[in-house]
Image 1 (cartoon, rainbow over the protein chains, first blue to last red):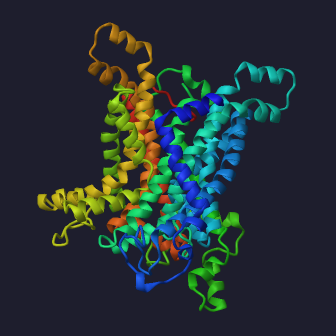
Image 2: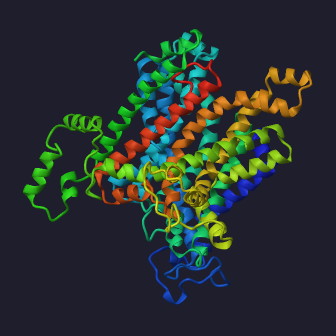
Image 3: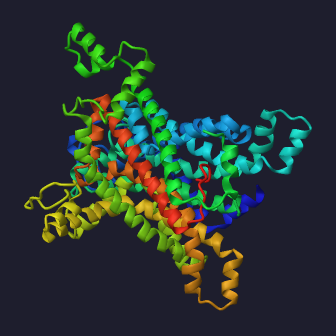
Length: 276
Length: 355
């Protein structure tokens, strides 16, 4: 653990990553305090100041109804991180349980569970989420459900592959010989060995959840107006290209900054936690 | 359907021929496709509200709705409903789209080729740029070309494809007007649609000018679509090649005095291709999904506008049909990748779990 922290803080790339991620988290947490126009997160119109290019009053410009782009980006970070947090606290436990059971118990449990996992994996992620959103009302909660439904199989497969390797190891055999229950072997013996891979994947996945969620709302099927969302901001802005370029470029950059930050950390973390 | 324990012991059997490998893949693919149809059917049925009422709209009478329920078999138990659905599916009948009032199959046949053209070109870019970049990165491991490639590829996977599409349009259509802003082909060109793939149709029609125009239109969207794929493919190839570099046969080649160039190409790249290609097959799924995003920016007349349209209209038949066809396309692409892999390495054995 101490070694991990040392390597993370000693590597320039992961330092950059941590800088970007702290910036994003602080921006989301302190949006109420630092946003120049906190009211602009909602359904506000100020036509007198509509379509202002970036300048002293509005650092990143204003949109077609006169709302401050910077303020909306700060609040959109809040939505994006919240969504990531929810998805990544539901999907991995489901996937881990499925992967452990399929890998350790084997036989028909393995066959059935992994075929189900495969079915989920063979629908393109975005398309599966689209289909789910299609039959449900497009709300923030449903967006989280849709993204979660497409996320757990990746953890199931990851943990399954590790479990298959671990279950023939001596320590598992030893636990079985002294009569440990299946649940004990799975969750107390094998699971700890899956943790590094799971943690790495979760770090990288914060970024991917942000990408998928913004893609859904870009298509008009995610977070709904007037809640600020990076994907819908880009989507609205494309109608005013190239003149009002700031409406698409800044929300797009905001996505890039956040995801890049998490990816940088995840990448270094992978090198440290999974040296093979 | 043997349990996987027996499937796993298959590794000591003699070489499995490509044909039987293809056959087994087809069977397992059909099984998965069956599962996909069940999953999509269930998703479409958990919809709150009455599908018949949604289809007819709020002004339809109670009798009309009841009649519709009867035609759609909605009064039967859910298993019977699924059986009807599956029966239609086997006859390639996906029902009528409420959005366009045409058979869903006709709609998809019209829109899918444009999407596939984009996706295939993006897939080609992903492999032809991603693999060499990854190989270069591995060869110069931990030196500046490696650092640069790693940073760029990490950046490329850090934004959704619609952000790259916006960036490309701003840079190469507006700022430097090199490429067209939208569409598939110049409006003044009239081409007989045969396959729906314009790059093919223009050649069939013997119109080099039209072919150039179509190519000119598809390059920018395809590149925007492939950007994260290129990054992913490069990162993956690098990881696999570095693992290969550490194997004894590379050390031996060095000891014999082969040049680094030869070692990189013949002894490190080729064996690394196999695991890379398998995962790239999975990335194809991402391309198909992301095509939705890129098409919107470039006003590309593919499946995206139709797909989003039917979703907003809650057009169940069309939603189910679109998802099924896209999944089937993805599964077929994976079989092709699998065959490619077995051509590269004929000794590779079929393992349902090795993927």
